[in-house]
Length: 142
Image 1 (tube, rainbow, N blue to C red):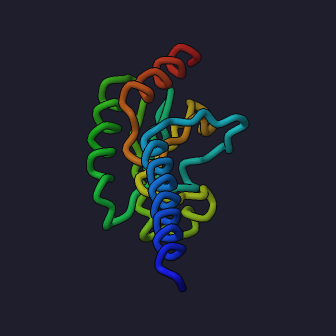
Image 2 (cartoon, helix red, strand yellow):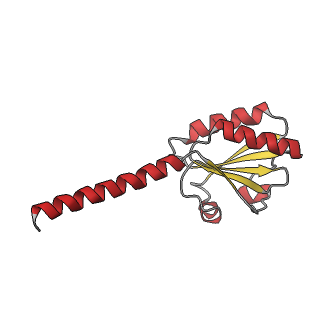
Image 3 (cartoon, rainbow, N blue to C red):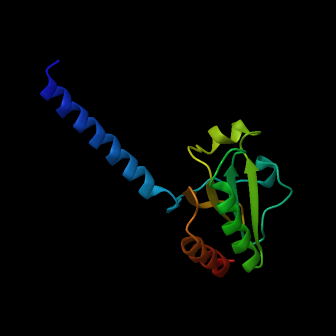
């Protein structure tokens, strides 16, 4: 292969991979509302109960480096609101849930309303203010 086309091809590939990486990085930690979310029960994820008003369901793994930061945010939020519970599920021991909830990265956080319906989803460490807004909305509905 000639040197000039090889250099151009290399530059194009590097630019493409960099663009994909930037897009993936920008979407981390952003919340997405879920229309017609699935209705969950505590037994589906192996917990005795969900919160009365809302549940912050965190999917993690043993080797996840960002999961402790997410855990701190979610535990703090649950402690600040009556009727809100933080539940963490280790997917290392529950690969069935990885497929069921289409978890592509950890942490992944699902916000459930008081009935157990998924209302919001976040991939990566969640943004505290976005979760605070959603919890306020759910608590007003309850």
